[in-house]
Amino acid sequence: MKRIFAATLCASVLAPAAALATDAYEIMGKDGKKVGDLSLTAAPQGVLIDLQVQAGALTPGKHGLHFHEIADCSDVGQYKKSGSHAGHAEGKHGLLNPNGPEPGDLPNLIASQDGSAQVQLFTQLVKLDGLKDANGSALLIHAQGDDQTSQPIGKSGDRVACAAIK
Image: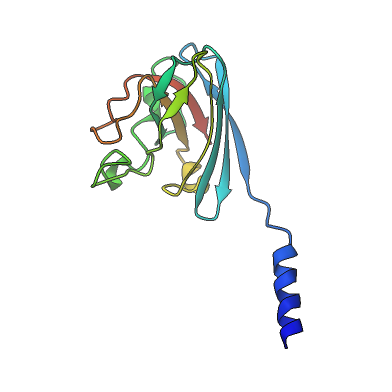
């Protein structure tokens, strides 16, 4: 009996993992030109985010990072057509807010002295298929850091980069 169990355990451990969907997007800066790359990978309980921003694209320091409700980055430099934070009606803004967070809330992105940034992070607040619904969504980078509690956007300021997620 022990051998059968051991063989079953080994087979399940060695079985190949199911392929996970990964989608790639361009991040556009204030002038509408590409400043980086975004990859989103569907995970069983959320989304794995890989983000790279090229040197000179951001000011050094913290930048708010949020999913917004519409896949529209067409109003270059403003990025207001991307709407509000994804799921803004489901809670209050901020990862540290006792009445939050909203599904679109993410940790801050930190740019180095040369204005580049690279991060891999995970969120359980959204699913990839939800981000790619009929309206799509957008990943927005803001001018300042998010304090993770203030309403409505954590004092993170202007929208300085946008990736439309469809």
